[in-house]
Amino acid sequence: MRIIEVVPHHEKWQEMFVEESKKLRDIFRNEIINIYHIGSTAIKDIYAKPIIDILVEVRDIEEIDNYNEKMIQLGYEVKGENGIPNRRFFCKGGDQRTHHVHIFQQGNPEITRHLAFRDYLNHHPEEAQKYSNLKRALASKYKYDIESYIKGKDSFIKEIDGKAKKWVERID
Figure 1 (tube, rainbow, N blue to C red):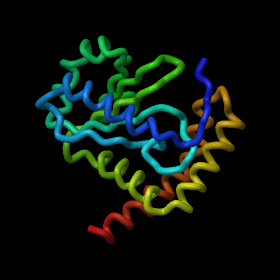
Figure 2: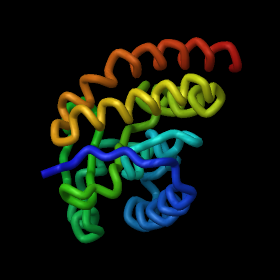
Figure 3: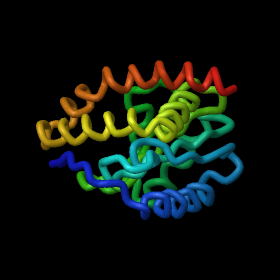
Figure 4: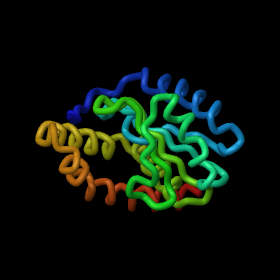
């Protein structure tokens, strides 16, 4: 059973991202355009589930299915699109997840959305702390209910997505 736990920000998360990125580059090689650290572990000074979220931008999403066996050998579970069209999703660690890999083809708007969310919260620490407090409250309330935890964050995430989109447009 998965337990929802959020913990204080830890410096090792960036190191874990770098280490795993090297392994992913070894697998996907020429398919990769870029690899990004996303999600709460990429946001300074907030509580997060200790799962490293990695976004991989690739040339051709259809080619990624050819690497499923190599991802399994690296310890990942292959999840396909997992509810998001034109994505490939992999998770590592079973019920004690350590990594999520989200793969999108270049030009997919999800890439921009994830990066804008991360960057906006890193540049707006007061908003980041609101997100941190929400995550802590939801994790306490829904310790064994990941669906309710995710649903509880939904409106806040949509609000930040909107603010982040406008913020990115202003700085571009």
